Length: 273
Image (cartoon, rainbow, N blue to C red; front, top):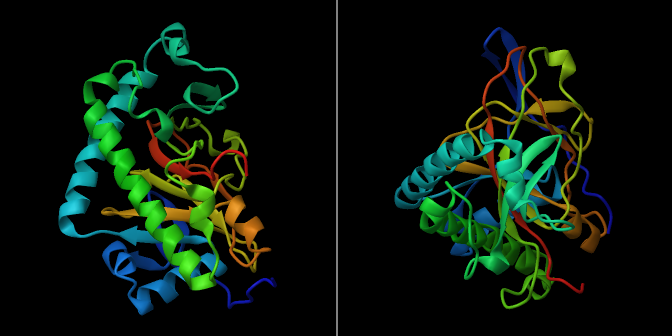
């Protein structure tokens, strides 16, 4: 399938601190309308998936309030957990899997969907397990609603490769994003995502995307009451490049160290595919 050619992504400019940022004008898609198979919302999702591969997903007030509450808990727990000693965090390290504690330039802790029923979490995650797993289940509904819509729009059975009753590495990840005293010292984190669909929450300005046509770097606005969504490599590969897995990176706006915590959800295909 050929790449969809589009006009350059529009952007806005905003002063953040002492810097002028070029910000991507990404499509905003309503979850409830998408779930109801509204043709306008379905078309907006397909267009976003075929062009930049990034978009925002918004929710009704009740779901937005629940997600906001869960995220507050996750950010607080992240602050407490990642402040622990290295030896204490390494008790949750697991070899050769994404799950548990990891330190590869950034620190992270991931909980796989497969383990929700019997996982034993370290503190402080353990004290808030019901909230964390509820957020993970909400995330799973969000990504699968998007996946189902794209499947129907393209006449492809993506859902067969993401069966809920099959083992996969789908999971929720909490990340401590380190910052540098000097912007020039920020490491290059340029990448595309493995898997199929990624959700990302962060309260701080921390992410940039590379536009598909012009290869310019634009900032992603950390809008409240919505989540940033991007497609990943599996869907791009399965559609011969029609759907786009965008290049993006984690960075910072200016000099200065601050705590930054990310909550991500990664939908990944079932094992054996």
